[in-house]
Length: 465
Image (cartoon, rainbow, N blue to C red; front, side, top):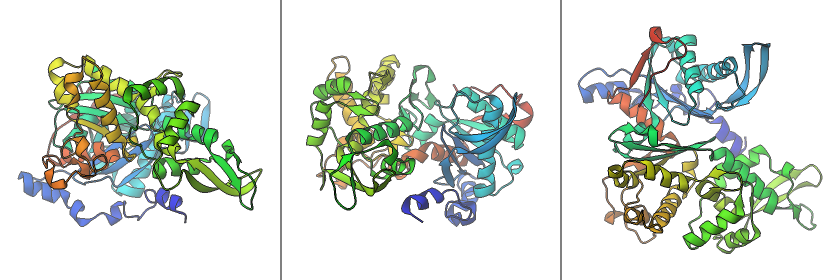
């Protein structure tokens, strides 16, 4: 099995180290440990986090989910036109009707119970991690499947943003959730998510992958084995499997290497989805760091046979600029503008506390260097405006033990003994942080909003505000 295939099968095969059969004894006894710690028997619940394209599941008290896989598969549903069958990726597709959405959610959640959790759904209560990015119709579908189809006795709803900050020991901060099909900037103050001031964006991992594909078609070269000159890459060479490999294993966020104001102007005029201007490409190439200017991968071409694909190194190091700066040509706002507008809308007395504890979660946050690059860009932008200059020095990452600019990623001379040890949240993966927060909340007997099976009418859901 190839390396890519092995990583994909890791979370989907019964009996892998991430399944309940191979669950470590230290985490399997989390209920007993919690009962000894808090003085009463702690009830172990199933913890679910359904994103727009990924589902994570496990048991309360565990430090990581047992499974995390993409929401996709063949499903059948009954609707106005009778039985239909097809393949669907993600949960937030607007073309899905309620019956089709329920069938997709039921297939995914039932598969999690059968392959990974290995428990009866009727015997365990569920703690559901809810993100502000999840549409209301998806939340209703999840509730209908859990309480109606699977007959779960009770579902407890937890806000994902508050739970994520709990993993850092914080109750206030600015949570930047950058997922597959969108992003959200949510301020949290004193343990309450301020959804009225939240900002939602369309940039995310899906747009990032499309941007990498477009840049590869525009700037990559193909050279067939056996000699011959290189030629421009063709779209058929960038397969989905190759694109997934580049985005998940080769991509990084390169540090800023030019003046922020100058770069912002170049990005506004020359950066768009799947393309960059020649001036901006030359600027990126001149600041490339690495042993080679290209990354070589073996691909197959229908017209030219097997050869190597030469991808400029800056393509994978600068693709995240689209998420930070946005795409003005296609009216896609970037994360920096959304954070600035969220701060402007938030109450004045909360702004310094929010900006001092920025927590970046979601799948895109796992890109190496992305969190530090976001803090660097945000500090530069705030320092350049008279209104926000006083807050620029307070920019910090919530999960880092000390100021972000003392991290070894940006300052090689920073010594671990000189850094503050008050924070220890960097031990959790950024993509799993919301799930881990709910797991901790249940184990610590921190309540959420409960809904019993007999109280659900199939439509109404409790509000987490």
